[in-house]
Amino acid sequence: MIATAVALMATAGPAAAYDKAFLNGTTPYVDSKGRLVFDGMRVLGDGLTLKDAVRAVYRLDPVTLDFSLLSATVYKDVGVFSAEHMAKDVEPRQPTFRTGGRDNDPAYTYTFEAGEAPVRMVYRLKAGHSMSWIVWNQTAPYTLRFTGPGQSYVFTGEASQGVIVGALPILIDGTYTFTIAKAGAIPVTFDIQSYNANARAMIRLVDGTVIDETFRVNLKDYAKFVVGMKAGQTLALDKPTSDDIRIKLVDRFGSIIQNSTGLPLIFTAPRAGDYYVFVDNIRGWGGSYTATVRLTSPSTAAAGVAGSVGLDPASPMPVGAMR
Image (cartoon, one colour):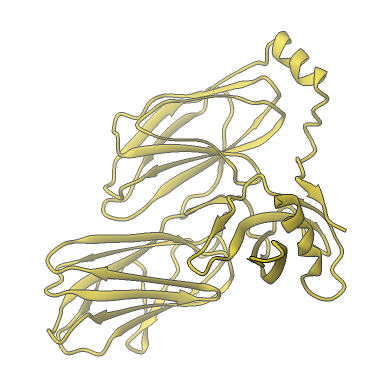
């Protein structure tokens, strides 16, 4: 059934000529409207490469059980991503926002005064940004709404309770608006600050690399790394000293290989290629992580097993061809 749904991507747009679709990094799900969604699918052909991703939405006919394609959105040159974690380096590292007729530094704390019209923080964001906000000192309930190209997020906050919102990944370049308004008739005041969680440059790991990262307090923040591995090599990273620190390992499609909080990372590569490591303060409460990378050589036995099944380290693993 999945292969059938993938093949229907060929109906998207005029003169589509897709060769292959890769669902390695995709977790299909049914949305609130009963539609089948593939988000983050990788497609080759018609100008698309593995640096691009596709969100495809299908409708299932309950009588014939046939799928029909409703929409297909291309995340052009978005690179590897997994939920809020974006591997792509992007500038500016901390985007400014415009509100009240002026541009504001991202570190600027905006104070929303009682009786003020809803605050609209307008950003020009790029694919690769991952936006987080901290709201505090609020005196009454409020509503947050984040909107942009193909994206809408609504959050209702309570009084006298600081809240960390996001990180929300940006997959399409464009203008995004973060709107804050009172939830009822009671006037509300609060402070708000924004942060791009994907602010650090990608670092390539080798055996012996020392990782030493400290994360922002009260905002989502992560460090990202890439490691080239041979089939049979083992990567090991020490256990964090805090249970608030998470280590996530994904492949070049964004497939999650390990995703653990407060645990060490030990991974033996089944095939050669680049793998991505994200370390983050999963609750947004700050913290730090220090470790020394251990990258062992592949054993003869492991190399033999990999070779015996005909793995091609340079090739992705397609689910099915698209004609």
